[in-house]
Image (cartoon, rainbow, N blue to C red):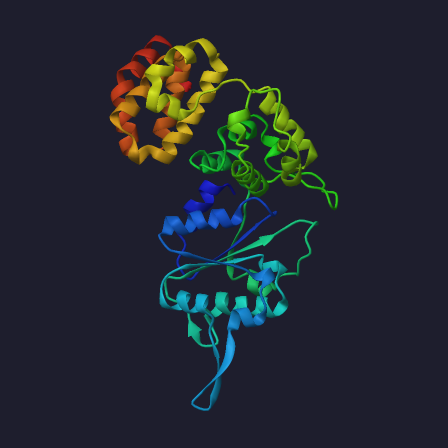
Length: 357
């Protein structure tokens, strides 16, 4: 299941239905659940069960009025007092004792007599694959979850990365052009480094911190000496070499913001430098931008984007407007309909084949 579908479906579940997300490491499961928590409007408590003991779950014993009881840990107390998203990561790498505690929370929505808040959600994730050392999950526990196999798409990752300041634009363009390097899907040799969404994120963070932002070196044949060794340690040899080669051969491209915020300034450059394929790529970037920023669009930005799209071939114009309609975002559709409604009608009447575009 892709991320958009998962977020949409998961947000409709009742609070007492727990979720179990399965997938290989590094696909960004914790980021996905953070996004779901934001969608629900709840804070998220993130616990990696593989690093926890039974005491980290149930707390420590205390003597109260001559009776011994367990004092619950602070994060669990919060989940009992207010609605939160309680996220248990690496559930199948936890010890049996920790799994049994998780079982009681999922099954009974309580632990040692302390009940969860009625609106608290309990979500879990497991890593799958022959390269992981995991414990078999109790079937009685598994059947208590809404279980889903997460398969984030390249489009999911690009949309997530688009508005982040720690993912350089050229890294996003590399993944878009060479999508097979986002995540290694073949056999994995022990001790070898392979790329995945999480490792790309760590690489980008590191390069920016080190003053080696790839955006600043793209198109230069001579790369900083540390760029390759740093890349090797995060994404492995094959991906690192391909990425460095992409940086060296990089040619100027344009972002959605270039169009929305300063199209009159870059209009001539776009017309002279982009062929039809590149213009279509730019429309795809604009759609990613609109999906993330549609609520904050100004009239000037809508006008700039419309002027750019109108400079494209008729088929691209119709395709752009179809994509706008598919968003089902009423205000976004209204804003662009003012610019394209009459034009689309004229194009379709002139070219009947466009009706199927």
